[in-house]
Image (cartoon, rainbow, N blue to C red):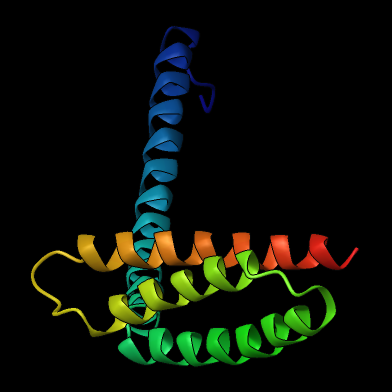
Length: 132
């Protein structure tokens, strides 16, 4: 009496599989919703911090201080102007990027900053190799 007819067993297995898939899909939905909420909160906080003008201003002040010390010592050690010229141009481009008006697009600021950082790094590399 309690036995289930074998003709219905495949239907029950199929229904069970569908339920398992539905449970996994529900779980994936919960994970997606929670992860999206967390990621949006983290990214908006990080974006606000990283996009802050204060970050650029502090970075520029640090770059100026390090450049002054490193290039000053380099000039005393090797008397080469190329590192100072490269580094000074890079710092000038970086300073310009901080003071240009910020419109809808930050393309000009980004291009000036990247070019400035590349020139500054090149100046430091030349300065370092000139001492060796």
